Length: 285
Image 1 (cartoon, rainbow, N blue to C red):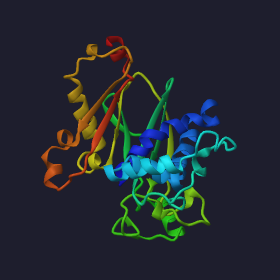
Image 2 (image 1 turned 120 degrees about the vertical axis):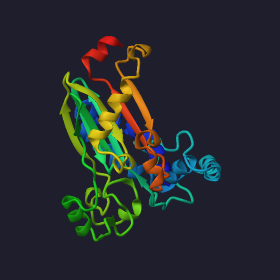
Image 3 (image 1 turned 60 degrees about the vertical axis):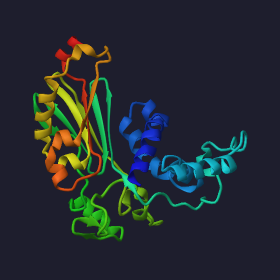
């Protein structure tokens, strides 16, 4: 399921970002872009299947554990390879990757810069003097740049969905839309290629928000920013350590109210708020 792909990314994405030479040279955007593509590569083959199985239900976890004991490289077996991941063999060596997927919206702060990388319809929003500004773009199939790529890759759009199925145009996973061997990863029907946006931070910045599409289906960016400002009034910053960061997670029922439930939305949606920029807040912490 998409949840398993999300767990996989949570486990490995940040590790991959740190591995690339571009990151060491300060080019965070390029490093994150490579890491997004790397997630798709890592979820293929025997090792990819086993890792996804271990993150899935109990039966798959057990099966993955057994296959790991049997098929994973023994000490010294893969020492001749820079990356042993692809060299694990087994009954799922031809696994082409998960048919489900997840969005990824990543925000990395370095000094006074915020680097936002996004693939999918999750969204990053910054509150600047209480005004909401979108730092990412929702990758919906009807966007011209997405539509053009989808059609060129041999796909189609029906009722706002890729091939009549997927309601977003970029994602990690969803490998059934990435099977054209004559096209690079960034030109597949669905791609993990993220948009990269670099923003200079200033003292007027209050917080950033990362949230999935379920939130944006029932609130605008400004409505959510206003809601969070109200919630922050009840938070005592002095109760937190001097990490200069306060991360708040809101449940979608709290944010969207009963309207989400009444509309039959039963998935789990989360809003992550990073409160880290306001100079006054830093002085209080």
